[in-house]
Amino acid sequence: MKLYDSRRAPNPRRVRWLMAEKAIEDIQVEDVDLFAGRHRTPDYLARAGIANVPALTLDDGTTITESLAICRYLEALYPAPNLFGLGARETAVIEMWTRRAEMMAATPLMMAVRHGHPALAALETQVPEVAAANRRSAERSLAVFDRRLGESEWLGADRVTIADGVLFIGMDFARMVRFAVPEALANLTRWLAAMRARPTATAGT
Amino acid sequence: MKLYDSRRAPNPRRVRWLMAEKAIEDIQVEDVDLFAGRHRTPDYLARAGIANVPALTLDDGTTITESLAICRYLEALYPAPNLFGLGARETAVIEMWTRRAEMMAATPLMMAVRHGHPALAALETQVPEVAAANRRSAERSLAVFDRRLGESEWLGADRVTIADGVLFIGMDFARMVRFAVPEALANLTRWLAAMRARPTATAGT
Image 1 (cartoon, rainbow over the protein chains, first blue to last red):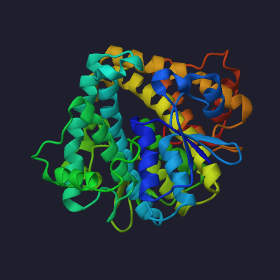
Image 2 (image 1 turned 60 degrees about the horizontal axis):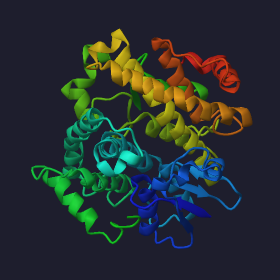
Image 3 (image 1 turned 60 degrees about the vertical axis):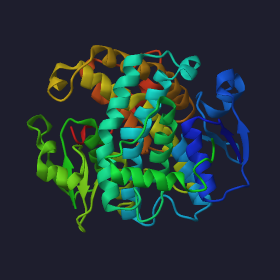
Image 4 (image 1 turned 90 degrees about the vertical axis):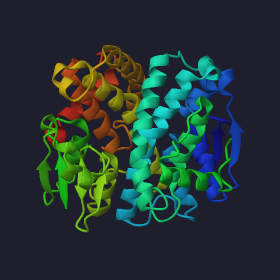
C-alpha cells in the first residue's frame, strides 16, 4: 500500500493521526506538494480520480480517496485499538459524533482557513465573507461539543475514537487563523488539552 | 425503534430510501414539522441533541442523528440487500463514492435549494450568492460522476448501494430549483433515469 499525503493539510492528517494511534508503520508514504500543483498532474488524476489528498493505493491497484473512507479501511486491517466502534450501536454513536465534528466544526474551520489565511491564496480564490460566515458557523457549534464533553470524557465513546481525531485536527488547523476555544467552555478546553497531550497530536504535521 | 422523519427534506429521505430498498416496515415513523419549528422544541432537542432530522431512537433510549449513521446502523440490523459493502475494500470504495456524492453534489445542491427557493425562506436567511456558488460547485462535479458511470453501471459497486441513494436524492431534491443533468452527460443521464425507475424512487417524499 502507498499513501499519498500532504504535510500540513488537515484531511491527510486524519489518516496520519489514525496511523499513529494504531502504531501503523508499514505503509509507504509519498508527499504530494499541493503548492507545486502535484495533485493536478495527469499521473495523479489518473490514479486518484480527483485532485484531492489523501489517497491510498492498495496492493491490487485500487486507489481510495476521502480521508474517512481510508481511515475505516485501515481500521479493518489494523483493528487495535478500535477507533470506529464495536457493535452497531456504539459504531452509530461514534459515526454521529464524527459527522457532527466534521460538518459543524472541522469543515467550516477549514473553509475559514482556506478563505482567510494569506498562505492559502495560492490554492483558493479567497472570499472574506465566506471565511467569516464559516468561522461563525463553527463557533456557534462549540456549545454542542462542550455539552457532550461535560457528560463524556471523550467525544464518541468512553475512549478516544475517530470522532475525537476529526474534531481535534479541525480545531488545531484553525490555529492558523487564531481560532481558540473560549475558556468559558471548560469541558471542551479540558478535552482539547488532553488531545494536545497525546503523543499522536503532531502526527502528520 | 422510532424514526423522526420529515417529508420532503432530503436527509431524512436517505433513511426512507434505504428502508424501502430493504423493505423495512417495522419501524415506527413520526413526522417532525420543520415549518412549525417542531425540531426546535425542548422535547425534541432533549432527545436529539441538535435541531436536525432525521433522528432514530433505539429501544434502549439512545437517539442517533445524522442520516448516514442511521443508515449504517440499519444496515447492521437488516443486512439484505447489502448497501454499504462486503469486505473492507468494497466498503471503502462505496464510502469514497458516498462521500463524493454527498460533498461534491448533494450538500451543495441542498444549499442551492435552501438559499434559492422561496419556500425555504422560513428556514434559512437566504443569500443568493451562496445559492449560486453552491450550484456552480455541484455542476462542476458532474463530470466526475459521469466518468465513473461510464465505467460502472452504478456509482459505488456492481449493484445499487447507498452511494447511488445519496447522489440520486441530492439531484432529485434540486429539481426544486430547476436543476437538471445536461444531456451531454449521457452516463449520468442513463443512471438517473434508472434510479427514477426504481420502486424506491419516491420513498420519503
